[in-house]
Image (cartoon, rainbow, N blue to C red; front, top):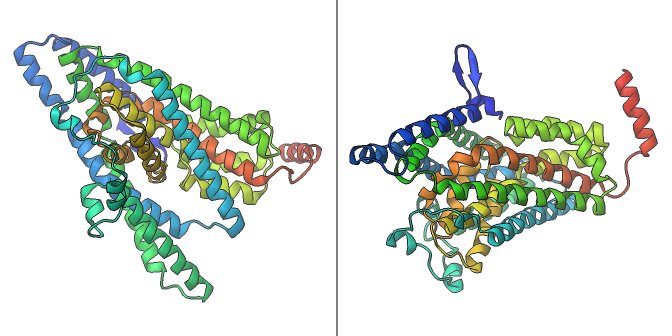
Length: 436
């Protein structure tokens, strides 16, 4: 889904979502300064408090959509993905290892640079501080099994939701395989229902995301009016930290491609240049998928099976940039509000970010939805996600590039150490194609 689906039509022209957010930021700064910029009058302060209402409503909707999105995304992926046996097992290993490394890089950079300490934000209330509880491994184990099937959806319990999604996903995948083997199709109505519900949730998500510019305007104007520009210093450090972590993840991809496939880093970057630019401009890995697939086949020269598994199948599971960003966001917000997130809680962030990234549909700003689950899993107040709305439009584009680069890396590694043709023959075929 291209970001232009979220565009606002004005005078016959479509205004992209990121332009709307930029306009909202400019207007919010003007209003915030007009209201006092950190030193408001009593009347201005009272007015500024109401500006956050749209943002609170958007976050409330995101929290409501998070659990069904994750559950349906996992079930949809298990039912619809066509993964052959041996290649499928290797594909799963590559996806999980790439995502895990991305999250660990994100947590490492966030722990080293501590961007959340670069600006002053009001400390959490006693109720918010009490949400971060001591780590209890036995309690966590007992809490993995829900009291009722629908309880994780109601309580936003991430660990229980993961267990529920995996249990039903594996069971449904097994039943489908058995029925296909025996020529039966009783699974089709359920598969179609899950697909329809998944698409319905994404449709509602699109409506919510259309309101993000209004939410950004309100929360930024309120923050500047009541607290001035001090809280945004930490955001600048956070943007730099995320870009550094994403760059390190890109270096990891190039190293892994160099050591594990026949494709060189230069060919990889040149062949994927169109896909990277498309990913950054559209802010959607789904919209970029055809460009990625064509680049892997025509510009890099991978086998069709490798390109299909990595770019088409793997893209349903592989959102390394999103997982990295969500993990860093959790640690950043903990630092901003002065809550210590110990190593055991960070391990929970790793686990939940992996599964949350599966539910991050290939549409702009979808990571904001799944981020609510990561925050809930470690007891962070989800209302602080509002702070990230001001920069998420840019970082979302950057992490989408990494998502696409991850898909291409998986394809190259699946292709192995031997090209399907010699470089000379491949060059001749490419020249012949251009002549035709």
